[in-house]
Image 1 (cartoon, helix red, strand yellow):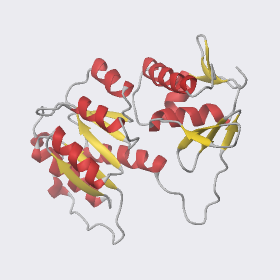
Image 2 (cartoon, helix red, strand yellow):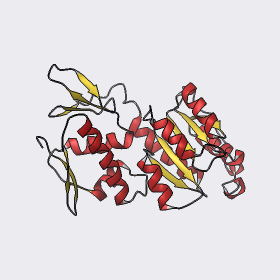
Image 3 (tube, one colour):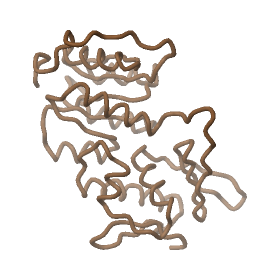
Length: 255
C-alpha cells in the first residue's frame, strides 16, 4: 500500500473546528495510521465526526456500537479483510459503504459492488475527492429540511417505494406491509425504475443517476439489478423488472 507520505500535506491549509451541531458519523476502517489520520482530519474539517478502526474485527465491533452514517472501508486489512467486513455489515444494515483499495482491479471492484458497496476509490487518492464522495453519498441518505414537503410514496401494484424513508415494502391484501431487504444501491435503482413505470432506462442512465460518484461498469449495474429482481421475485412480485435487450431495464406492472 502507498504510505501516508503520498497524500496531501495538511499543514498547507489550517483546519477549522467542526460546527457545534454534531455532523454525520463516518467510520474509517484503515490499517495505516497516517492515512486514517489524514482522512479523519479532512472529514472533521468539513464538519463530519469520525471514528477509526485498524482491523476488521474492531470495525465490526465499533459498527455495532456507534451505528455510523457511512463507512470508509479498506479492502486489504490484517486478519478479516474488507470484503468479509462488508458481508457482515450487509447482513443486517444498508449503511452506505465506500470501499478503498491500493489495487485498481476491476475484479475486486466488481466483487465489492456485487455485495452492496456504494462506491469505490483507489489509492493513492486525493483526500478532498474522498470527502466529496462521502458528502455526495450522505446527501442521498440525509434527512430533508424541516420546511420541505414530504415526497409521496410511489405505489406500483403491491409494491410501495417510500422515497423519504429510503425503503420499499410489499403491500398484502389486508393492507399490511412487509419491508424488502434492499441495499442502498438496490433501493436507488428501484426508486428510479418505479418513478416512471414502463419506461426503459439505459444502463448508462442508471449508472449516472444511481451511482454518480462511481466508475461502475455496465456489468455492475446488471449484477445489482439481478439481485434486486431476485428479491422482488422472492417477495411475490414476479418478473416486475424486465430486461430490454441491448438497451437497459424497465419496471413493468402486471408482469
